[in-house]
Length: 207
Image (cartoon, rainbow, N blue to C red; front, side, top):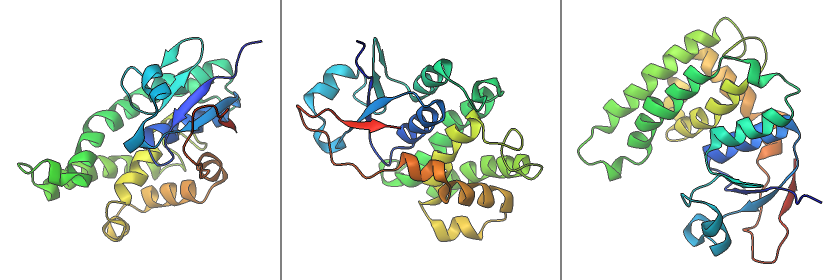
């Protein structure tokens, strides 16, 4: 009998959230091992080449969130996420948007950069996504797609760096998209509060 794959995860990490969203959509069973990032267990460090979450431990080790999403959806894709042309948007999110997000959220680590200018770089991208969302409820049409699942956790993280400022911006479609996600069933399902995994424990069945 093949053992159930293990997903090493951290509740608030946007990379881990997107992986859990795809696994939930696919309905592929895994066992969640919550990692306390300041006290990473030896079993996790032995499994993860990068020492970062998410990490899927199955027949092989998959150490990148996009690869985990594709792994799950290649096994079962009831919502048709893999049929969507999501790659350019995810590339933009994981490249220039994430860089500007980090420079904004963790600005003390980058004393040579202007955090306001970095925030504006992220906002410029968000305005483009807002324009794309004005014609439909989601990035690629009238239903959630792989692009939405991959981007929303990072937009949420950016918004939470200064929620009052974010809410004051003129991007109503983007704000509705994020609010719908945060209030929806999928987000609630992938955000259970778990105690950190301890050696000898089986982990938490998911989804």
